[in-house]
Image 1 (spheres, rainbow, N blue to C red):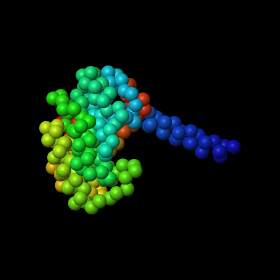
Image 2 (cartoon, rainbow, N blue to C red; image 1 turned 120 degrees about the vertical axis):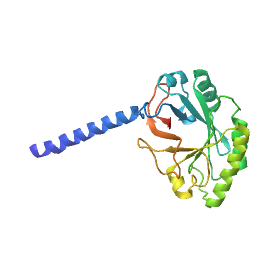
Image 3 (cartoon, rainbow, N blue to C red; image 1 turned 90 degrees about the vertical axis):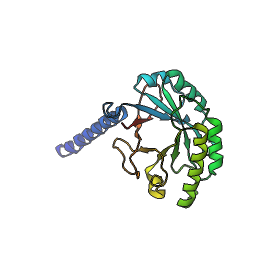
Image 4 (tube, rainbow, N blue to C red; image 1 turned 30 degrees about the horizontal axis):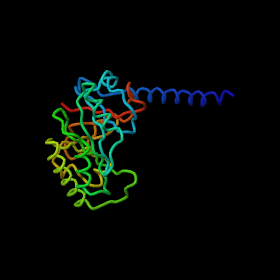
Length: 223
């Protein structure tokens, strides 16, 4: 029986440590002394949000997904209005699809997101999405992204942020070809996969804050 006691006790200790680490990860965010401006980015997957509670939890700004490919985010209008009503700065995100033409995607975004003097620069989230298996050549992808950027910047009068995933960057090397501010994503450790230094960092996709049911993406802006 004594021989079993050590493994069982060790297993309990490992589980306890894992639980503690998980709880710590849920509450973690980068230091405010290193990153003065911090916020969230959301989509309809986050459900209804109490934006006043999110602001009270330390968010200075929020990005809301407006569109994905040719579709609209079901909660964008509520989020867009709620962010503004809370007093936070707001921005809109388009999720890129390799299965839709750039002109269709840009027109979808431009007709969904109203022009607003207080808006942050628009962002395009560039990743492989479920339901789209197309893999065009790099030249085609870059030309399409350039067309999208030109159309969205003409509408918003602001430079587009490139929220490029690590796996998409590894396949298409987008950030070396498109001279726009970069928004990189990697949990807990500052990312270095882009060709140029990032301006924004999605530091966690598992942070828990008041006002949002479940995990939310937490972002910071470099100095």
